[in-house]
Length: 157
Image (cartoon, rainbow, N blue to C red; front, side):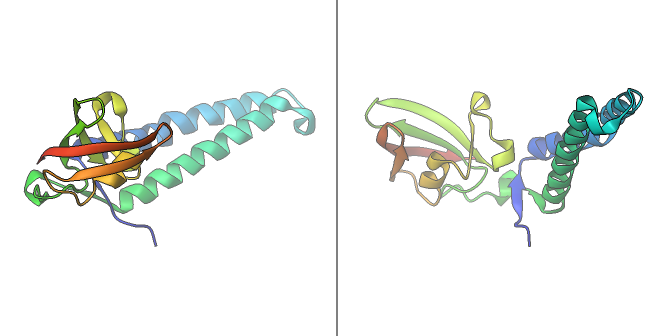
């Protein structure tokens, strides 16, 4: 059984938009590629046809994954978030102890993660290290460059 995943309304809307686009425009483009490749003759030696079939397989796998995610997706609102500890959808202000630098991240589902928007996955090393921590707690993160100590300064939605 698939697990329930929590999203912001914005994150869920993005997934729905991607799913709709793949089912309409994506499928139409792949169908056109297959048709064009078939028109070129012998399918047994047709690299374009093979490439189009592979593209179709990848597209359908992504559609199936998004449909599964949508079935198990739940939207969380501010009133659903317990800000006494770090949970999914918490906005966390942290201090990188070694660099004495403050950062703010929102902990989100893997599909919603986007570092440019300061959204980190609950499955990431930092996300995992912060989960369940309270303001004032420290979290140790295993990173490729070694251990990083982060202090939780604030938790909000």
